[in-house]
Length: 460
Image (cartoon, rainbow, N blue to C red; front, side, top):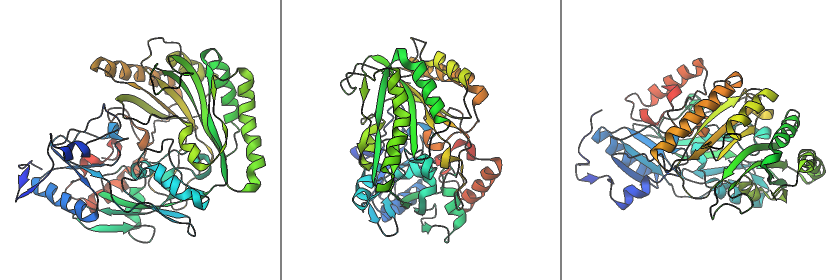
């Protein structure tokens, strides 16, 4: 497709230098600026359709985003059009059906807060600022993941406009093939305008994070690993090594030092489950607290909205690079090598590196799941660091390569799409058979490849 002039037939798209362009190209990862030829924010289905018409008239490829949290995984669209989805309507909860209709551009905090008065919550991510659509259709690892599995499995319907401008609502009964491909297929099918997601009951949670000093790292990790091997499904946790800078937004207990953190949530679906949940939380935390006194400990009983604060994700955009992989069962050798690569290198450019606990429902195939409906892995690894200069980017990638070499014996070779931070890093989440099936669906709904740059690399 060849690029045509930015103005055509009297209609204009926001160009670089305009306020509309700046708003449409905002991303959370400041190192992953999309830099398209034009960018537009759409707030209704007619506006999406108009943007697609303009893109086709100009011969421009289209990439779609909302909050920009996954910007690093998106491929460049320098001669194309970036569409930012921020559709109106708000979250609509149906407590009887235990579902929520979520317009594209909605962040997880809005869903959790809308569901909470009904005793419900969602398979949200660790940060309330993350967009629902990209996260859920990209797999989604939730603090409730060991109960519900991938967040993609909670999607019950998807509304989207395809390249021809037609509006579709797809589910198990209406174009089930497209509905299957949308859930974990890697994108590139059209512009999603809304989703229906299933909610789960929640009476309360035990949630938070505890941070131990660096000298306790080996014992904390070893104790956590022993617990994780037999952990109950109602508990989902993450363990991380943090090297946070002395900055105003960093808690003073953590600033300018290395700590090891365990955070997560114990899900309590009904009041009768509180006693069991307390025991499960105690089984996790009591042995860890016995190792050393945490420098900061926020674990407590709370509500579903408190889970959004447990992981301590930054609230403001930052420039960063990182890597991600899915790992099999880890032994003491794996942990020793990982610690050596991360903690025992004073020059490590990574500020956070850690493991998310998988297993449980993550391993169970969903009866009516999508292209990605399970994870045959024990842990998800992720590590990242700030990019303040070009040299930092090279240093981070080199260090990520080293960690990949260290963890190669346990690397499954798979990733979760919504966890990929850099499109140049290895990523593969589908089987060869599913790659072919997804490509056939994409060819059917987008035969001219209008959304080709919006698809993940392993599903080309």
